[in-house]
Image 1 (spheres, one colour):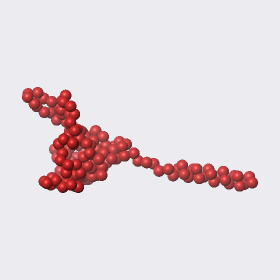
Image 2 (cartoon, rainbow, N blue to C red):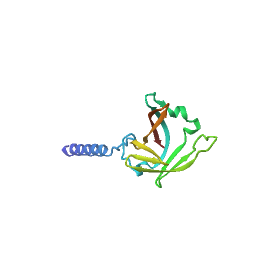
Image 3 (cartoon, helix red, strand yellow):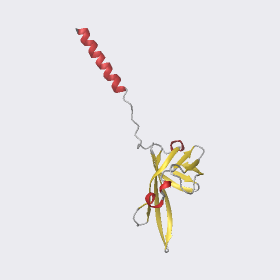
Image 4 (cartoon, rainbow, N blue to C red):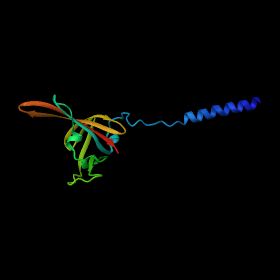
Length: 152
């Protein structure tokens, strides 16, 4: 009887140990990862974009400035420092597919001679900003465009 009870306790302990140690770690796609060239490589879709100029209200430029056929296009960051723009899904009348160069130095991202700041990089998204100066009626305003690209 003692042997049977001991065997059941041992079996229960081993079973609990196995099931608790085999629990899969779930990757959090929103967890920030190191901003490196290798981590940025992949295919992305523009999923959010806003623009803030001076004291003016923030604009949702994705909704206001893009045609519906552009919202499903892909941006493919490749290891050879090339970004391929692919007119995917619904085709636009004018195909804007093409390639440009890119490089990353720290958190500074340069795409075809335009400079961006990488604000956040996760397993599922890249968020970067583009800051510019705009002169209107003799006054200079600072504008910040924030773009969110979601990995496909």
